[in-house]
Amino acid sequence: MNSRDRIKRSLIMALFSSLMIAGAFIRIPVGPVPVTLTSFFMLTAGLLLGPVGGSLSVLIYLIIGLMGFPAFAGGSGPAVFAGPTGGFLIAYLVAVFICGIISAGSTQTAYRRLPVRDIAAVITGSIVLYAIGVPWLKWRLGMQWPAAFSAGMLPFLPGDAVKAVAAVIIRQVLNRTAPELLPERE
Image 1: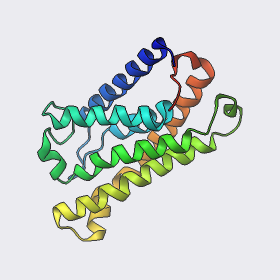
Image 2 (image 1 turned 180 degrees about the horizontal axis):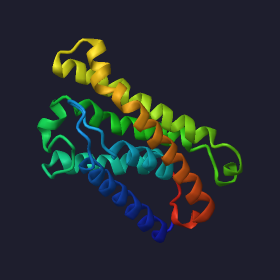
Image 3 (image 1 turned 90 degrees about the horizontal axis):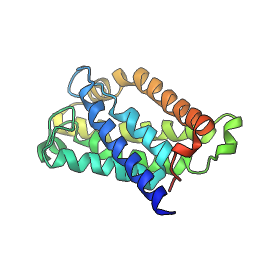
């Protein structure tokens, strides 16, 4: 990878970190976990940047919030990680990595067909998000399982389906119309 590609990749990772921060401020309160666009940008980063680049963009986002800058929907600083939404924040890092790994096998030429890998990647990334976030929410708030699912998963399923479809469409469109804008996925 030449220096121009490294710079482009770094800028796109920084862009996704910034978009995740902005996505946290576009929120709809529905209980202890608000609806935000952060997961949309996380999934899109995994599809566009791959497991390494996507993970680095999420890691930058998490470090910014951990340092106390207003990056998360529920506040900032280390206390947010100990709160009810901390599991979802931690899950972003795992979910983007897995999403990137699964989608890494799809190539530009594969976009003439149904992007099965990308669809599987965003679905798996969303499942990972719930698999870590919901038990954490249950534990931190002392809820029973039905209440935890009702508070941390069920209200989000329709919106997350739309976010997943949008992330796949964005990757397809960029791959077809402007592949030069996309960095190599690692």
